[in-house]
Length: 156
Ligand SMILES: *[C@@H]1O[C@H](CO)[C@@H](O)[C@H](O)[C@H]1NC(C)=O
Ligand SMILES: [Cu+2]
Ligand SMILES: [Zn+2]
Image (cartoon, rainbow, N blue to C red; front, top):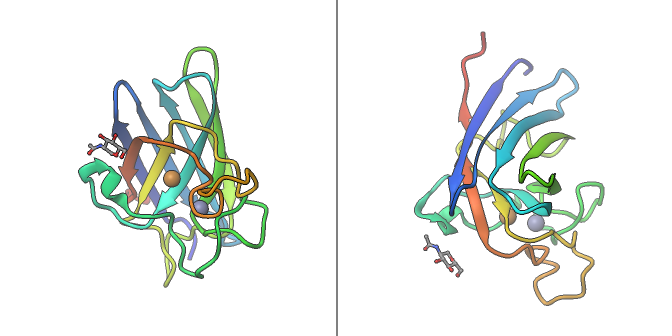
């Protein structure tokens, strides 16, 4: 199914704010576009987490979305969580422009990301390769600075 659109409004700790849009493409991949401000300059882990629950802030959004029971990895790895979108990069102004296309985060079907959360972290995601005890589960990306629940957007 194409033309499905979703949006997540990012909020959380301190001044982290933003908006991220998801567009399902004809080939089944999902285009992710947005802008997140209030970050420290540099790399920040960026993932789809399993739950759309912000009862306890971004901490309630569960682990990385992982419907195929894989280890954490890079977006380009075959061994990766579906939710592993790697890192976004904030400039000196603390703003990250998000532009990603990924084949494992559909907006329809059994492994849909609708109703789940997108999360931006304090630290870089080591993409599973940092040798830290958390590398294979979270990429050791640190605190959850901001998040938003992925909801359907008007299709016109
Ligand atoms: C989320 O978890 C972190 C790390 O455990 C903690 O420092 C923070 O206060 C928690 N945030 C909320 C809203 O509970
Ligand atoms: Cu995450
Ligand atoms: Zn992961």
